[in-house]
Amino acid sequence: MGSRPCQAAVITPPGTAAIGGILLCGEGARDILQATFRTKSPCEVRFEPGRIFVGQIADGGETIDQVVIGCEGPDRFAIHCHGNPLLVESLMELFARRGAELISADALLRSKAVSEETTTIVAEAKVERLKAVTMEGFCLISNQIAGGLSRWATDALDRGDAISIPDIQEECKQILADSRIARRIVSGCRAAIVGPPNSGKSTLFNRLCGASKSIVADIGGTTRDWVSAVWRMPSLRVELYDTAGLEDSLAAADPLQAASQQRTHEIVRGAAVLIAVLDGSRPLGRFTLQATEGQSVILAINKSDLPQSLNANRLPFTCTERINLSAQTGKGIEELTAALRRASGVDGFDLSRPVCFMDRQIQHISQMIGTMNANDITQVLRQLLSIDRNG
Ligand SMILES: Nc1nc2c(ncn2[C@@H]2O[C@H](COP(=O)(O)OP(=O)(O)OP(=O)(O)O)[C@@H](O)[C@H]2O)c(=O)[nH]1
Ligand SMILES: [Mg+2]
Image 1 (cartoon, rainbow, N blue to C red):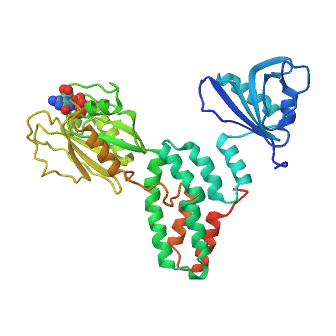
Image 2 (cartoon, rainbow, N blue to C red; image 1 turned 180 degrees about the horizontal axis):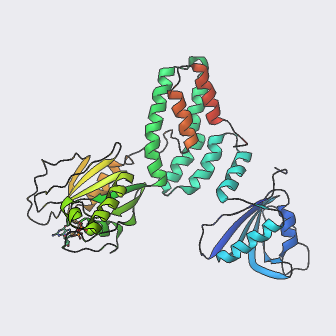
Image 3 (cartoon, rainbow, N blue to C red; image 1 turned 180 degrees about the vertical axis):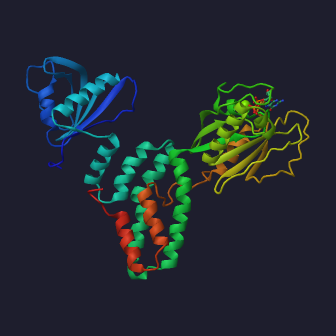
């Protein structure tokens, strides 16, 4: 620990906030603070682990900011200053001039975890869980520390000679499938609202995000550029997109419409789930939808408050789920939420299952599916668990 270089990282998100946080650690961190930090007391500050200090950090005679310093270890300090990014920047610049290497919070936490933990998966989990966008995502990654992927890999290694290659490979395939769902729970998923013009996409979008972000009008082609917002539900943070209505005749008549529809196609390609909104009160025109592999399509037949004349049994695309709703009255929105949870796979997902939450882990698991040699599998299992202190 003592030979770790002195490093500093900003641990609070970019932008203005009430508090800014800097982690300063490694050999020399204490000397930097000893030279720059002053309290009101005339006595010299004695940085002892577990103690908190209030005072000022100065560059020469010039005070930069009033700070609170938590001494977390012999060479490890959490410095809390005011949140103006200029102050945070000035402190970082001062630390750099006094010999600290400036690195990202991610890199600092990772190197700390690697130096303290016994397996890579544990070190990775302790860093990655901080980035989870849902509480369930945080739990899912935490569960990989004592159980989940760590336990699966350890148990597989313990099987030693009794290791069955087909069994291990089946388990690896299941882990990869579960990891795709885990990624959505941890990092969120994208859903695009698509459909013909005037079907009620923007009305639905506004209702789901709880704000009047998109313009609604009874004129086909109202939405030109896509609009996005966050839609939260248990286990899922959905990045929701409202898009321009897709209709060839509109695109042919107007270059702006053609450009809007081009953007819709781009958004459609990047979404995990498509919510296809059709107007249930009218026959379907020439609208069609092409989902790519792995994309789920939820058919939302809108305007259920009006007399229905859409023949939903003869549609030119297939869907995973189908619901009736009225974006205007809100009827059917709960069903849509449930359908989205099912379509994204997060509904009822067991958070203690072994899953990968890093590309490195996915590579190792994929490697095992591709080999028929028990020694190679053992080797890869060791790599999956072992610490690479240079990595
Ligand atoms: N009766 C009824 N009208 C609705 C419903 N949803 C939307 N509308 C109306 O349908 C019209 C079009 O709604 P929008 O949300 O702008 O439709 P859109 O699909 O975004 O239209 P474009 O952006 O032009 O593609 C508006 O007059 C809405 O008030 C609904 O559930 N019931
Ligand atoms: Mg619209």
